[in-house]
Amino acid sequence: MSLSSPAINGTDPEGSALAIWNEFLSGYFDGGTHAIGAMPVQFPTATLRFQEASQPQPLAGVGISVVWVAPSRSTRRWDVLTSVEMVALPAGTSPNQERMRAHCAFLFLVRAMVADGATGDNAQKQVQSAAGKLFGLLENTAATEPLSEKGLSKIRPSPARMAFPGDGAPGEDLGYRLRIVSCRAVLRWPVVSQLP
Image 1: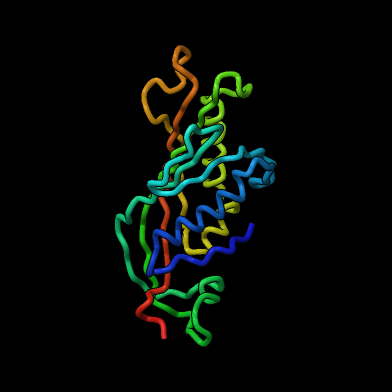
Image 2: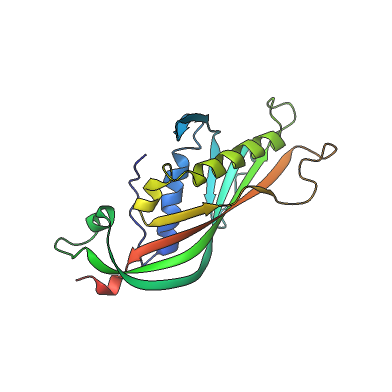
């Protein structure tokens, strides 16, 4: 998969990162079968939202909300820019540029809601499946290579966890479920003040 979104930039690292996530996740959570490594995986269709944007109500099926957690630390260093980053810069710009690196985290809130009798799958099964596929996708370095080319690298997801106690207990209402997949990553972009 190649991504057409612009690379991470220093004037809007949050917005550019979320645009990249949107394009990447939309390419998988479309109800189709996609190869993760050598294995074909059937992905569900999911409604994607970012930051504080709410999911449509009532939610029908799976929804994934991506929340950017502010960088914990950032550093500056000289580095050689990638060919994808060079395309976005003025012609004649040296590939040796000072680059910012920001260590940050993303939370993926995976929700599912199923109306009684609407489908054979209950919300618990749908949210477990979607969260598991998201984790498998993010931990596969070949699948996430397009993210790295855009400046979103060193992706380290944690397995999905229940959002609240009792999630999936047999006696509970199975109409709505929520799982959280957290992910550490490093954003990198050329320092704007260094460009000609």
